[in-house]
Length: 227
Image (tube, rainbow, N blue to C red):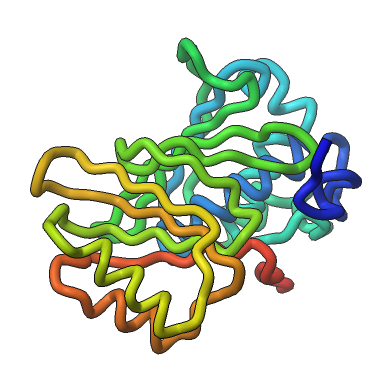
C-alpha cells in the first residue's frame, strides 16, 4: 500500500478522542471557512450517518465549530468551541438528517456572512483525512492535503487554457485538476491541487481573468488562528 506522506500513517497531532470524528471534523470546518474566505456569522451544520448519532459523544460538533473558527486539530480551545463561537458572534444551528449514498461520517455546512452564502459537504474518511464532495451544488472531489485553488468562473471556451498558462509561467506543478459546470456557458468551478502554493501575484492574475468571479485558496498546512 502506498502512502502519500507520514500524515497518512500516523494521523495529525490532535485533541481527541477520535481522528475521524474529531480531527477530520476540524479539517472539514476549516476547509468550509476557507471556501467562504472569512469567519461566518451564521452556520448551519447537518450531520449524516454515524456523525448524526455520535457527534455529541465524540465532540464532532465542537470540532467542526472549532474548524470554522480556524483552529487547528491540536488546539486546546476545541473543547470550548461553543463558547468561543458565541464570543466571536458566530451563531450556530446543528441538526441531523438522513441522506442515501453518503459516507457514514458526512456533514453539510451552510455558512453565511453578509450577502455571502456557501454550502460545503464533506466526509471524514479516517486518520484525520477528509474528502470534500460538494460546494454550492458543484460536484467536486479534493482532500485539502495539498494547497488547493477553487476558481469560480463562467464556462467559456479557452478559460482553462488561460488558467494553466498562468501556472506554467509561475513554474508551478498541477497535481490534480477537476471542473464541474451547472450548464453549458453557465457557472463553473475548477479545482486545482498544487504541489506548492501559488505566489500571490499569480493568484491575482487568475482573479483578473475575464469571467472569473472569485478564487479561494485552501491551505490547511498553514497553522490556523492561534488566539
